[in-house]
Structure formats: C-alpha cells, structure tokens
Image 1 (cartoon, rainbow, N blue to C red):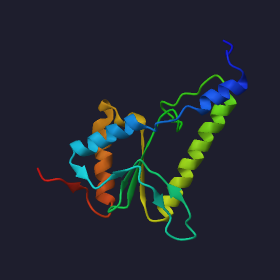
Image 2 (image 1 turned 135 degrees about the vertical axis):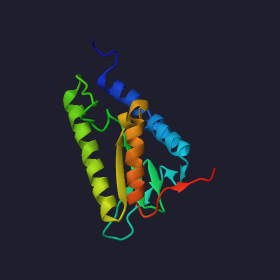
Image 3 (image 1 turned 90 degrees about the vertical axis):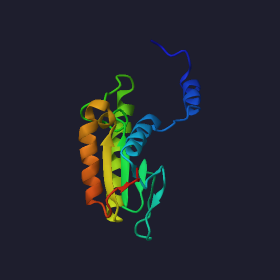
Image 4 (image 1 turned 45 degrees about the vertical axis):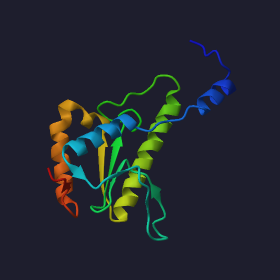
Length: 156
C-alpha cells in the first residue's frame, strides 16, 4: 500500500515521535527485584568512565553502585534476539543496519564497562515472562553472589 505522505512529510511526522524507552520491561524487572526484597539499585543512572583513557557515558537500565553491577534489559525486537527477534519486510536494508548498530553499541558499552571494573548483566525481554521467571531468579542470584556484596535484603 502506498504511503499517503511524501517522503519529506513522512520524515517530518516520524521525527516528532519520541521514544519512551523500554518502560514495560524495566518496570517488570523492578517489580521482580522489589518482590525479592533486593534493594540498592537505581534506574537509568548514567555511568561514566573515570579516567581520560576511558571516556564513555552509558545509561544502563539498572545500576547497583555498591556491587558495581549494571543490568541491561534488551528488547527482543530492537536488539535482535536470536529466538524472538523479527525482521520487518519493508525497508529491510534500513532495519538490518539499525539492528547491526544497536548490537555493535551493546558490545561496545559492555566492553567499556567491564574494562572500567563493572560487572555487566544483559537480559532479554523474554526472560521477564512469567514462565521464565524461575530461571531468571536463579541467574540473578548467581550474579549477585559473584558481585562484591551479596544483594541487600530488606528486613521483613
């Protein structure tokens, strides 16, 4: 079906669309962390390299400062999940390049954070589903156990 707008009009319309991030997946993980009584995390906190040699600025989905742990929740579509990622048929070259850039940025950010002494955990969106929750909790417990301090449990 042909677009009713010219290429320039469509571009102008799409430029007005502002993303809201991956709020639903972040909210699901935050709810899970709270339900487990794990605290000490911040959402969307900027992490910067400390030295001139490590000039970078990354905004992970969750940052556990005391444990020097960052968590990213990658959407299956935007980050090219091998199990659930779909490829749009229209404008295929654009989407291939977009997914490649996203994955390259993910690898670069992970490499920079690890070089700066951070532990990095990347979760897929589908790992937050109810049927995958037991495996996710096991994974989180292992990561927290290996981090500098065990997860803080709230009394109660």
